[in-house]
Image 1 (tube, rainbow, N blue to C red):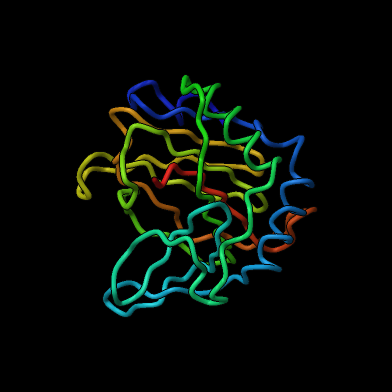
Image 2: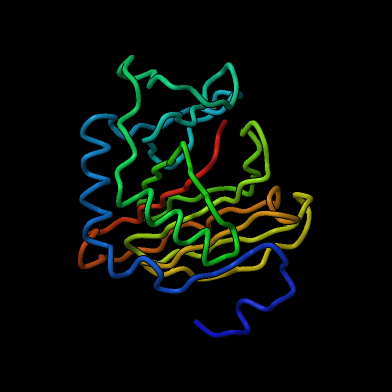
Length: 207
C-alpha cells in the first residue's frame, strides 16, 4: 500500500494499516462465536432486493434491514433472542483504533459482521441509521483483500479506491461521518486464516 493511494485530501478518514494483524486469529475465533449464536444471513433492502453480503451482529444493538426499512434492534429477528454480547477483544480493538484516529472514549454498542465471498460487493451507501453522528465508525478488515470505495457527501461524488488487507482498520468521523462508502466485488483467493472469504467488522454507536 503506497501513500499516494491515501492522500491527505480526505479529512475525517484515517487508515491504520495492519492495526489488527496481531489479533487476526482471536478476532476470527470471536466471529465464529458470534455466528454460532446469531447465524449469518442475507437480508433484504426495503425494496425487497437481497443484499449480496451475509451478515450478523453482536452487541447491545444490531443493524437490520427488511421491507420495513433500515434500523437497529436489540433483538435478532432470526432467533428472537438478544444479539450475542460484544467480546472484549472486539471492544478493546475498536476503542484503541478510534483513539489512534483521534477519538477518545469510543464505546460501540453495535458491531455489524459482514461476510464477503468472491464477487460479493457493497454499493455506495451512508451509515446514517444511528441516533447521532458524533461517534466515529471503525471498520476492520479480515481475510481476503478488498478495494474500499471512499466517496464524498453526495452519492455522485467520485470515489477513491483504497486496497485494504487483512488486519487493516479504517476509521472515519467528524466532517466525513456521513460520507458515502462501499466495497468493490471481492476477488478470488484464499487467506491462510480466513479461507476464501473476507470478514468486515463495523463498530458503531447506535444509541
